[in-house]
Image (cartoon, rainbow, N blue to C red; front, top):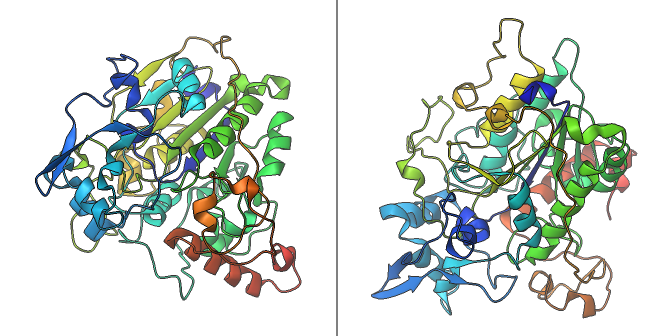
Length: 446
């Protein structure tokens, strides 16, 4: 049955962590020789000092590593991924070796439980050697309009290329879909002109997802976005410096609800979990060594294109093999290829052409090869983490996330320092609200 048995595809992209950072421990500490993860001897050398991989003692990082394409990612992946420490030293000279750090099963308990029960991919690369927005554009539209860096915040960017949701809308009949976000005003979809002022029927808050999923009533395609923490302290997207247990709890909650959904919906569900990009954090597998499909004209103007750095990826479904590793090369366009193949395949087996990268991508359907839906999946145990107040003081607000945030006094909602992605989404949300006076958008946030 495989992919044909799937009626609900659920996708979640978290933020800014590499494969080795989150899952490399499986080979280094757990003895899983089937996983191409960390191994003794891996290091970066900078200014005559060796910086080896090391376990991180804290669940937060003290700084946000640079992850713009040029110059930072280019430096990081140069010479077989030997420039991560050099790049991070410009951001955090106090201890540039932190960028070589990794977490283990005690730090990522939900991931550990999922890796034991389902399939992980150790050759899933971000689509672009650059930051969040170009990679998320590839995840929904199969291209980035030539971008390998973050766009300017002003004027708010507005893209007109067709997304996978436009393809679903054009199906005969249309294919059902819905996006859910930690805060629906700050959805990545609002970067696209067709969804700038989308209402709750297209982009809803995550709480609505939990209710719909529990009832076994998800649409054919569900696109999930975490809380980016733009106007709150509830960030759970895994973007440094956020406490990684925030995202562990989010992922575990989503999975448990899907597993226990009404109407036996779990047996017809595929949950794809990955990260948009590596966030400047070390990984030992060079994307420059991976073959890439022929490039369309809308790839970076400098003509320089590889995949981005490797990121964690899970294929979670009763049709996926237990404790398995896929070594085939995937990137975010594989998500699009899978959706097109499952829901928009023509009678002759072909799918609608999207872009060169999507057309040549490998579908995830080949990882769903169990002869029948497995019945041995178990709920995961969620980490216990203090809930911070809804608002935090401006000074040091992001640094507090996950580190004593629960003790911070509640204060009136006010702006905090935003990273590039957050600032862009806030600019886009402001534009959406201005375009919809009197609508529910205009009062969605203060």
